[in-house]
Image (cartoon, rainbow, N blue to C red):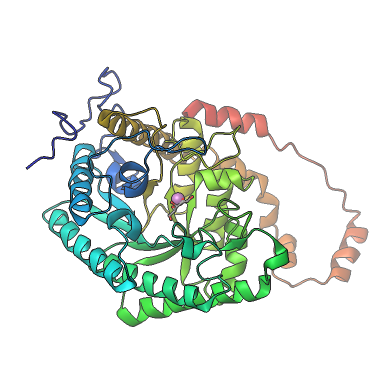
Length: 436
Ligand code: XUL
Ligand code: CO
């Protein structure tokens, strides 16, 4: 039986670019074939549980604006919340969802009680996921909201907090595996510090390295086949987060021997906070062989804060998917909307409109990216730019077959005089503009 929360709304349909229906897809037709693959299988959309069903609309100056019948801390309310969540997944026809333990069950008096409530909710989900219901893109543990984590989880000065966090991750990995989650995410919510005066950085990094190794060891022990993902973010909540950006995470993984075990979940808003573009983070992860999945939610460019807004900029999204496609597309990853409404958007319908619009923006972006790839529009100029490296002497330098002296000797013998060539940035930007 329906909860009635969404009134008489019916599942969103594809109606084509000319449709005036604000709750219909104009660009996202899941069955459309792009580069030989269905659009749904390219984009692998996921709706997140926390911003849609848990966040009350608060900001630093005011509390709850949303009134939802499931707000509260009973298991009955948790089940009502799940009913509404799965109704929304159906209305949007999204193939995936994502959640933290904390989003789906009220915290228990003890760790054991919290775990048994999580297990009960997982059973409840499993029933709704049967027969073509939505699948789990990733599960994760909330290791940042409760006050026990105020000084970090794995990086806490108190080993009891490290142990509590480890036990919590174990429970969340078990549930993720049971629900066939395709990835398991760790975002280091409070793995960082506020002041060096009370922080032993070397010790905290070693704690985090050991924690992540425990996770990977457990994954292999239970035969979990999903991908372990770290989600970089430079600051907020702590002033200095240890998993600042893709480059920092890669260095960390290398140091603790995990670069072949763990990949990254890259969030657009976090890339912006780190002073990068989304595509920089995507291309770097692909280059380093750690690209996994994305959180597709933008920040406000002026506020300097993680505002988690739904994507609405097609050119930006097109470039992002261009690098996702260049990386070979998603395997276990997907497009998770870690996005929330603005706090004045009170109506149930706003939740649907936000996601429909975001899915449309992503579909337009991906289709533009695919056309650029089909035409090799950016690939050909790139090939030409580096063509000099095909030369035998250039190859010999790269392969380590020339010493510094030999190179110097050749330059003076041949009177080598490089001629600068245009980088053609504006021409390339004009090419992109043709597609978006
Ligand atoms: C926080 C954030 C998280 C992670 C999952 O900025 O992005 O919601 O995606 O813990
Ligand atoms: Co995120």
